[in-house]
Length: 587
Image (cartoon, rainbow, N blue to C red; front, side, top):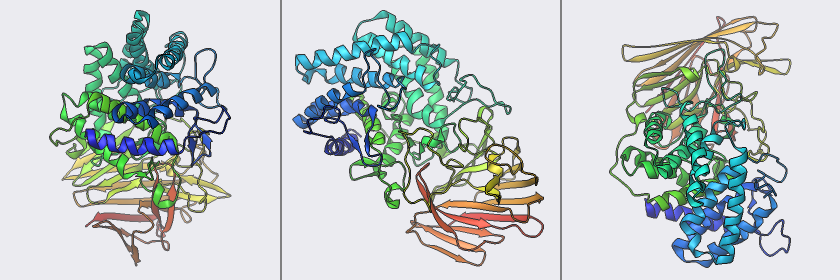
């Protein structure tokens, strides 16, 4: 594991250094890292001082030390006189100071010895100012979503230890124990939305799997280890184990329904750091975390092309440039894992290898289904983080198979730039479409779809080696409004060991123009043969067979930046009674 981590980290750092701006004589540019996807320098790129310094220390190559120093100096362009960092030159958001302080504290603590005294003092002076700002401002009253108090608990613990500051340590304990009150019985950390204590009409909380797995929970693990807080460590370890139910067997995180799935990638989340560092710490005593780290890490490798981590499995295939944010953020946790000693262990199972057939998560109104080699997620989650964000309405947001990998992976229902400097736009506009399965119709320029409906009725049962989930929903627009033509649908999902069947019936005024839209994950170069009512997609050595009551023409090749997949968009038209059916098998 150490060698694999080191080799990938070297690839990433070498490419970041190639993208680092040098010798222009313009202080606002020199040392910054240019992003090929966004044509800008991301304000948080200075966090890469940690992986650069790790590589400098481990390899003895002076180019990494020089890159770290130049990048640190570039950070002056977003460092404010009050001790905080701007997220970007055009963004006033400065709570991200907490992540920069963790990176710089780890850098100085573990690799500061290779700095000359003048540089080390300059770096420590900045860190001290950051610590003061965090202590004075990022309190429990700050009003940020849950990942910030969680991250600040780690920052205060590290800063308190580095500067021997008892007030910082006390604040770290206070914030960490507050976060414990936000853990659900199922191991999910609620509060990833505003208001942080919100409860929806369906009894749901603001929850995001990506931020749980890649930022909040790892921060609490760091806090617990630094402060030797065994109470928090026990609770967080137990919660993280439960959270592993949302890691698919190939190491992906299923955030197909979370509040912030606008920033979801199959391996995690676009601008968070990742789970590798925390799993390196936890994996020393429990091999399940080391196993999870290995599987997730292999996705990093698969999604790395030309030295940069891409925002999804098919970005490179589709010709989408990678945002450097993914690379410099996740490089930090690879450095942390290496510093912690990312040792391999015996191969073991993770929870999603052999899960129960049916599990219900009330806090997100979401069902996890496992039958045979299929894994599925169906949700009625109704937290309104952003209009056009995650699907609801009893949507099948994830379908995965052991031999074919992801088959369905719901994106945002309607892609939009929620965070201007943290998301991308595709130049291939004609193919950029939602990956969300849905019963829908178009009327007067609007889409009305079941996936928007926050008021659906969902029930599930397990019997006779089969799981059935029933849904009754209304076709509404993106803002939850019903058209003058009330239209409804009933959907039944049947999972057995060999297939997934989707049966539906549309009723109401517009049933004649409604259809079932089914995007099936598939690279454009994978063969797709449609004959009659059967389509066969060849994914590697597996044949995905889709049989429908009636396809409406050839499937369209599409792609969505959210999730990062190419797909074949099938359309199934109901019969005169409004009925349709689709069966998916893998051979």
